[in-house]
Length: 151
Length: 162
Image 1 (tube, helix red, strand yellow):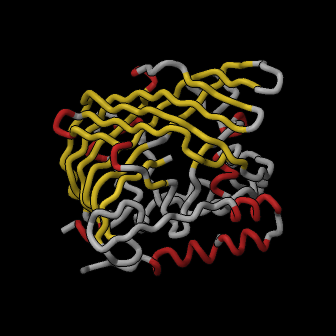
Image 2: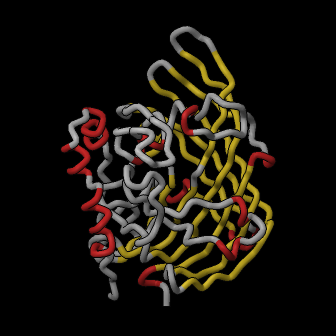
């Protein structure tokens, strides 16, 4: 297996704004966010049949609120590339991946309702969503097959 | 989700931001699903993603999501508005996303990012809803005119890029 180690590439950003450093800043909000971070579920992964092993992130991405935000290992779609898809960056969030990916960038509307009062209002939304479906080399170095939603 | 007019997405007007959080290995907003939640017919430029009652977090806004609840201080020489810190709350979302139709096609071999494959710029629609204590949301009916850009790809990256 030829698994690449991207941890060195991530270290500067992690030093700059790690979860630990955020919590040191002392806000309950940050602590709450850390506590609510989900843990992935592991499956038996002797073959490529397992579906929920821990994947590795793509090495690149963006830092939308630099220097305040975390590094985002995701390349947002740019509507300017709608008719020039050759110019997109890697749309996958998972590296060491071989399969199908889908991404959307949709803006629309809908109805929000305060369930306490019943009052409703028209709201706008932006949906940046997608999926990855295929095989990948997980954080454990093994080959897996999985389906993921980007939410 | 924003209080501004439909089609807008201005950070100071954002009131909900639903996502599954970055996982413990830094993978951005990805959650494992059952295999049948995603159907792909790449040769026909079609795909569908359907999920019911997925447990997510509402971080209130993208700034709080990406600062892990710290918000933004405003000014300090950075071009970001002041965003108050907000802790995430639990929510559930359901969605049905469909990709179809082709606007553009490309074969990409990107050595700088170590990815390659066949990519389609497609149409897309979404119908979705959200629920959390005190609030629920139901999107309008699927409307192809709401799509700004959507992509389908059959790709290889990282160790599979060669």
